Image (cartoon, rainbow, N blue to C red; front, top):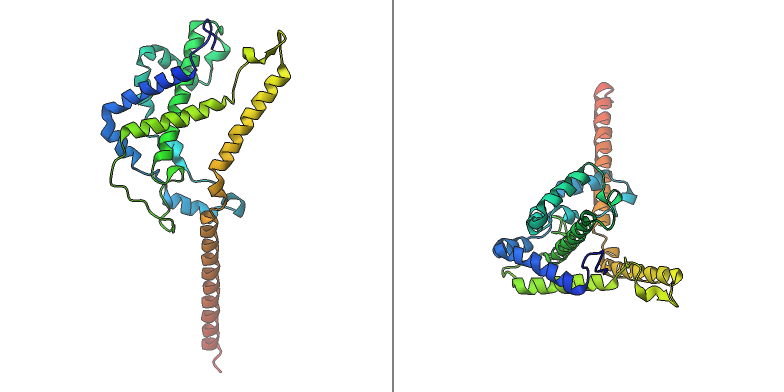
Length: 263
């Protein structure tokens, strides 16, 4: 971090920001824990309709609307940033008109740093929501579809809020430790000269670590053929129905012909 021109993104500052978020959440801990016990909802009829009309190459699409059902609302984030409420309101207005302050403000100006801090805090806040969705029943997969053979989860006891916060801290700190978006630092200066090749190689390795971890996290989806199985069942059902309709029409035509031309 540049103390003169920058924002605090070190582990200590991150933990302080997380504690600030948790302090706001604990004001209504019962409601928070109840939401955490609810799986991510799915629109069953829409999914069924999409499976019926989709081509075979589209059945791999994920029906995961977890980004639409965050446990912590945007209003809660605004409350957390209430000290800068006027500036935040200005930022939201700018963004809604599809313009960005980042391209218009001097990087050394307080306004620029405030927006950078706003974006950083929002990224951390969204990361907390992502972690919370991971802790929900069934995780990011959401509740099983009605025709699914997946095992259902029944949870009667609310988790301890301290354990929830501790798990979130560990996950987010692990994510941050990768530093995939690292910026130029003194460690990349060799013999009083910035080493562009070393810097690019470091960023590439860290980005590779992120992609590798994502592959590991999503490995189970590679062998989950539930959507494909449902698609095949629907196709077979349509084929059987089509065959029955044709057979019924053929029988009716035969009966009609015999009525017109009896033997």
